[in-house]
Length: 138
Image 1: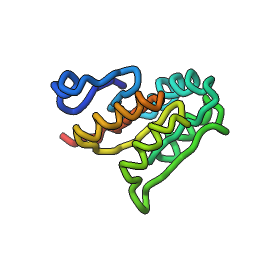
Image 2 (image 1 turned 45 degrees about the vertical axis):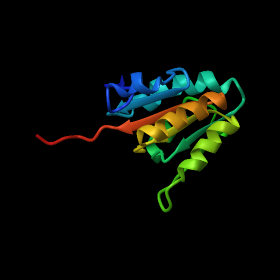
Image 3 (image 1 turned 180 degrees about the vertical axis):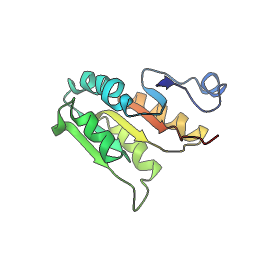
Image 4 (image 1 turned 60 degrees about the vertical axis):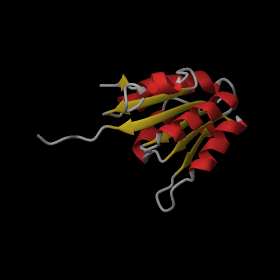
């Protein structure tokens, strides 16, 4: 089941004033997010003829997304061997070459989240942080 959660701390959204049209944090527990919700956002944004950048997404999630949108406009960057530097993500958002930047399973500080939101707005780039929920044993 998908549910949009602004940030881990429920008071944080009010404190930093996140603009939900440019910046979203999603906590998901299945691949349906990529095949439904995210695919819809990307299809809408793809009409802008700009890139969709997926950072650290796994292959199966990206394939699910690629089944529903134009694959020629999807870029995948994987920081498996060397993490993607935060400043490079921020610069990418500022440049505005992408319609959507999807950041998978990143743990950002409050300050970094504020900066991402600001960069997304300035670059006219939607930024979605996707965190997969961990299955908990009882």
